[in-house]
Image (cartoon, rainbow, N blue to C red; front, side, top):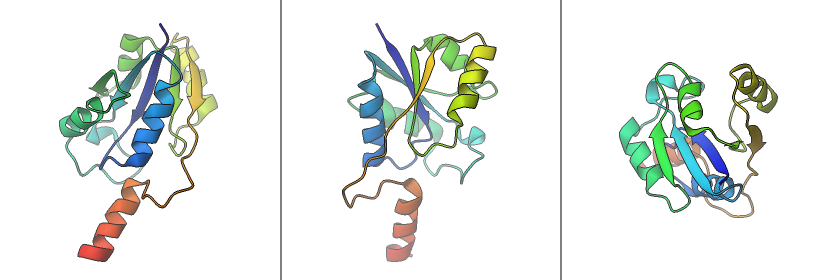
Length: 140
């Protein structure tokens, strides 16, 4: 059985999230999703939706076999627990693929790192930031 890990903030779910998770699921048999805790989101604005609510929404998506919150202090704790064959990063996630692969090796975790493709060709809003901007433009 090939285990896949996807991870992200998943604030204000949108079709881009579903596309990412569907593609990640296609790379294996089980898709385990790690939802970032608000306190660990430092590379962008903090999530609007509370941690457990974001986890619950992700867990309810069809491609997802399990969803859990990330560890408060150690990024690798849930990865060790899941023992994935591949970690799939979103097309626009800030992680450096090569550096992540090096860190996994340093931690003794044997899995590949893949990058999901971008969804394009339609007019859907595929970014939480763009959703927030649009709400502010039209409702504020």
